[in-house]
Length: 97
Image (tube, rainbow, N blue to C red; front, top):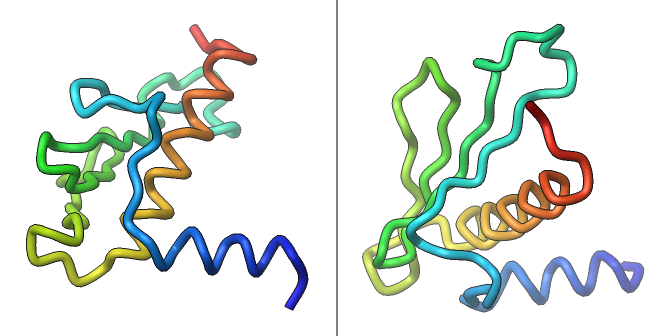
């Protein structure tokens, strides 16, 4: 296993909360092949109890609970935190209309 994989495994195993994310904000990104259709989005948001929610504009939101709320998918939740951080960074560096 290389160093990147070791780091990913370490991150996925421990609950965490990134300082630069908020529970009062949705992190939204339009997909790359949207051909101008701004409704083709991926949205990640977090409730105040840190449960992760993921949805597209046309689907029911899906929840992945935090470790203290009966969560059965803590690694998926951690990966969604990283996804939200990636969306935030891409939006800052490459804003979309």
